[in-house]
Length: 73
Image (cartoon, rainbow, N blue to C red; front, side):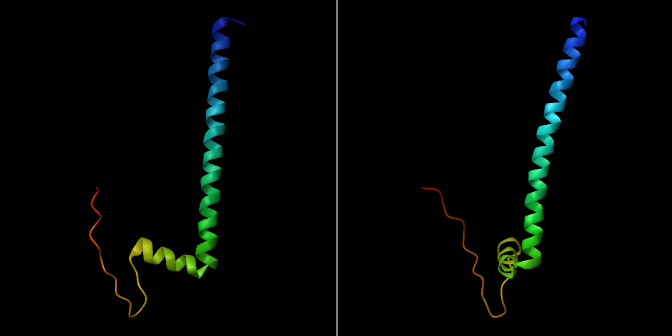
């Protein structure tokens, strides 16, 4: 093989490794999203937590007090 063929092969090997890393990250993200979906479908305390923290929702009769952000020392 010529030298440029070896370089081309090395680049392709690196591209495959990069894609494998990307696949691993996407699989981990998918697994995390599946876990969140399962919890949203089956865990009402998690649904309540998300509703309160992400959407500022409250139960009937509750009051929400907005506090100013803490100042850095």
